[in-house]
Length: 349
Image (tube, rainbow, N blue to C red; front, side, top):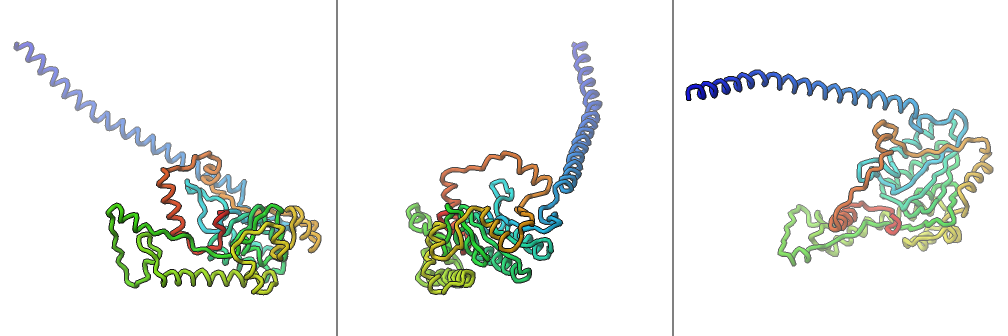
């Protein structure tokens, strides 16, 4: 028994000694592993920075690296005319408003630029963004005296037509849908009865009886309907003026044509909303012949994310995030409720 107790004590002593010896070693290994990971992370960051600088050097921003000889800029307006167009992963896609506005500013100050072609493939967009782009196009015309042509691809509806109106010439592909001259503020949903059926009661606290107008849980009053209608009507009158001025048409005639309907290219030509039905090359040739620009370069300008991460992730086939059917329906409701007053064709967006 004594021998057995001695053996047990010896084993316990050895176990304590082992723990004392191994603990510092474990900490030491942990610190060593942490250092290795820090070195790896720093190497990755350094590589990303160096590669990003190299990419920017090899592929400079398309606007700052404009041609050093006479050229006509082709500015692409594709997608909804709004700020912050991104996909489900947050990558910039389609029309980029700030980029477009800044591009026109640079073209204005570039003596090598001899003209501007707007290549439009858009269902329209926000009232604010469409109007800001319209004024920037007018500014280009007034400050430079250079020609501006609009070419409508598969669609140039609502806000897409709005920005075309000031152009010196408007060409449309024969399969283009255009027009949709009108304004929308979206669809308002009232789910108060649905909530009541499930015993859900809501209370909205406001200062100002119309502060919460448009809420999902309160029906619109007649007064609130009139308020919203006044917002739409004012934007609509603005649209009418833009078209009448740009197309040199009688305002009453424009109002007759502007009931929100979509026109085919041929229909738009017949009523004077465009100047010609032709392929893209026809618009280019017409500008060259009319303004003596046969020797000018044709320079395409469209948004490109020239950062390293932008170029890297733009090539990755990332899957689109999908939710349940209920989430899809709620997202549609949210979009309609939150989308601002707009020049957009609901059918084409």
